[in-house]
Length: 132
Picture (cartoon, rainbow, N blue to C red):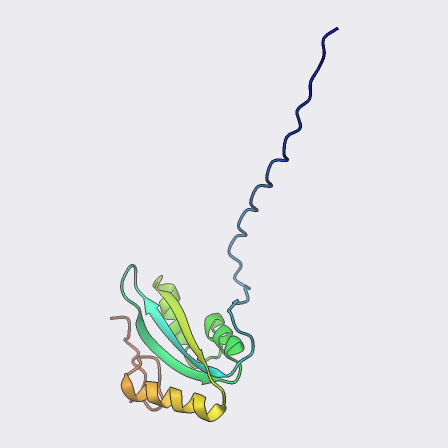
């Protein structure tokens, strides 16, 4: 009589899940919640260097950056739409602040040091031809 031997093996690892397709109704996920702070939006054409286009402050940066990214009746929606239509990557950088006064001081300091193309206040007006 032949004997059948069974070997104990470890279970095979589960395959990694497939990435979900792009959902236009996404919710931006960041390492912060509803916090007070200053943020900068940059554009990155192809493989070029980031160019700072906008700076702003908000009591709820997560909500405000989502509003910018989704477009609509936003103060920079025409610029964000142009960037999207031209296939230009946009990135956000942020700094939390401990008080509204500190956030405003940080924003004004940034506006004094650079002429942001998409800012209209404290900056000499927005540049409609920023992509050239």
